[in-house]
Every structure is written in C-alpha cells, then in structure tokens.
Length: 394
Ligand code: AMP
Ligand code: MG
Image (cartoon, rainbow, N blue to C red; front, side):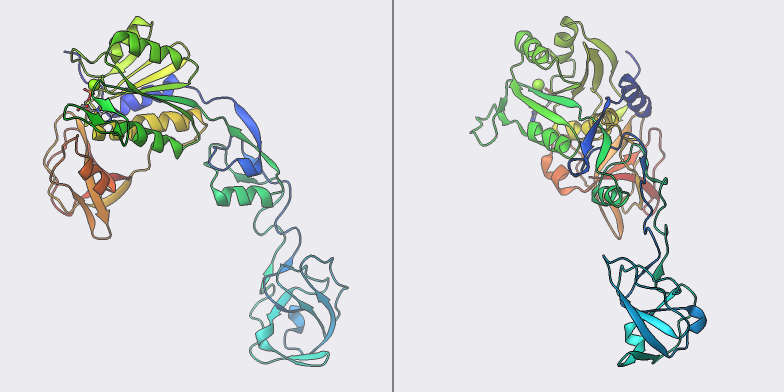
C-alpha cells in the first residue's frame, strides 16, 4: 500500500504544479476581487499639501492665544487663500488648503466671533500643527501603496484611486470547470427517487469559486461510465483547472482516475493523510490541472477549501493563497489523532470552539451548522478543554 501523502506536502505540490496566469490591465473600477499583479505605486502624495482636518480657523501657532482678525476664507476645492500675518486668522473648512503663514487650526467650537474679530473661548491649541493634515501624511508620490499579490478589496481600490491611478495590473481569472459524477445524481429541485440524491456538491463548489476571481463552467451529473467521463474531461480541455467531484476512490464505479489516465493524464499525487478527504487526487491533463475531489459533501467541502481554492488563488496571482488559520481555546476534549490530519466541523464564538458530536462526512446538517473547521495535526496527543487549537473560519 502506498503511504498517504502528508497534507502540507500535498498542498505544496499542488501549488508548485501551477504558475500564476499572465497579468492584464483593467480599469480600476473593474478590479474588485482580483489580485494585484504588481506593486501599486502612488502617482501623487496625499494630501498634496497641508490641509485642515476641521472646520475652524487657521492661525500661526506662535500667535495661538489670539485675538485675531479674519483675513480670508479657505474651503475645500479652492486654491489657497492669501497668506495671513501676525494677528490674523483665516476661516477654514475641512479639506481646505492651509494658507501661507498658518500652521495650526482652532476648531470653530472654541472660537467666539464678533464681526471680523475672533477670540478663543477655551484653551489655546496644544501643539503646532494641531488639526492639520500634513503633506504626504497618508502617503507620498512614489510610495508602494498596495503590494503585488494583495486581494483588491474596496479599501484597496479606494487607495488606488487616491494614489492617482485609473487602471491596475491584475492577475487573470483562471477558467475552472466543475464536473460532477454519479448515476445517482439528479438536478436541484427535481424529485429524487430513493436510489437517487440531489447533486448538492455542484452548487456548493461553484458557490465557493464564485467568491474568487474565477471563470466557472459547470458540467453536472456525468454518468459513471468511461465514455461519458472522457467526453466531459475532453470538453473542459481549455480550462486551467478541471475539478471533478465523486468517483475518486478505488471502487468499481470510481472511474475518474481511469478516465483521466486513458486520456493521457499524469497523476501527481493521490491519497492524502487527512480526514475527511483521503481520496483526493491531483494531476495534469494537457494544459489543465485536474483535481479530483471525493463525493461525500463534507469531504468535497474540506478538500475544496484546502486545495481547490488555494490553487485558484495562486493562479489568479495571490501572494498568500492558503486559508487563514486562526486560534481559539477548545471547549471540547479532543481525542488523539492517527497519522491523518483531521478537520472537525465546529462552532466558534467568544467563549471558544466546540466540535460537533457527529463528524460523519456525509452530513450536510452538521456542515451547514458549523462555522469553523478545527484542525488536528497528525499524531497529536489528546487535547484537554481549554487548550489552544487552530481552525479555519468557514
Ligand atoms: P463517490 O466519491 O462518487 O464514491 O461518492 C461518495 C458519496 O458522495 C456518495 O454517497 C455519493 O452519492 C455522494 N456524492 C457524489 N457526488 C455528489 C454530488 N455531486 N452531490 C452530492 N453528493 C454526491
Ligand atoms: Mg460516485
């Protein structure tokens, strides 16, 4: 019997099978959800010049006790008002440029007005530059504002716009085909006879991919025979990734690997030291990477989380494609593990993380009630309640 491949080795091998796709330039408004392909360099400084952070009066700090004569008015969107001299202040609004001669802003709440004369009604400003946003205080022209490989979320796009950019160089979206196999599968919403089941994995895996920059194609409910499987695999030959669901074990009707090999596919690895998800297979077929997920719904979800999504992120240009591991204190006693790493369906909240009593890899009722996969490394001793454990939020 071939030994099971350790989980991390398998994840590394899969990532190293693929290179990120070439980049493409997009209008910044179309770049949401992509990975940045090169460092984002600011074309301008922000702010471009000293400006007020408050509605109030701009003064010279040396002159901080007042009283002052109002010599002008500065508002956002206008060029700077004329310089102020000793004993003078300029009315100023948030986002307006500071006039020459002024270095500090007094909030309007601390000022009493009498025509053009104003005086303090409170403490003088505590420091030079109070309530002033200084030139380049956010970033300077030439700064790297966002690093290559970063996921472009709404704040990152806003950062790019403020940095003066109208387009971004981003990773391309990999093409991913999802092939589900099984004579027992029926379409969602149609009646399933007792020997049939609805094809629930198809929508689950598709939905997981829709959260990433991927172009998806679903080829559902392929029959368990060689010809149908070969035809489906061939029809997805233009895809960067072909993910199959089901038929990945070594049962008589598990024909994914035989079909894949008949077409000339090269297996890279098969069978991982993890639970659930042991029958996972990965290989190459033409220019595509084929990832064969087990059919049990929980196994399919766990292997997609740990293998398929990182692969797609990597192809799309992510710097850190692996799922983020978090730490919590376990509220359950955790038995020792064998040579297989385990991913337990769990619920995490402020009080800690608890595993569900049933860890049956066919039970969607448990998977859909879970919000975490608790990680148990291989060969772990029992963990008492209160021990720190790692998990992935789902
Ligand atoms: P397999 O990996 O093909 O042996 O399937 C293992 C189990 O997962 C069987 O009970 C299948 O009926 C079920 N299964 C396979 N594919 C799907 C699917 N697309 N949706 C829901 N369940 C599936
Ligand atoms: Mg099957």
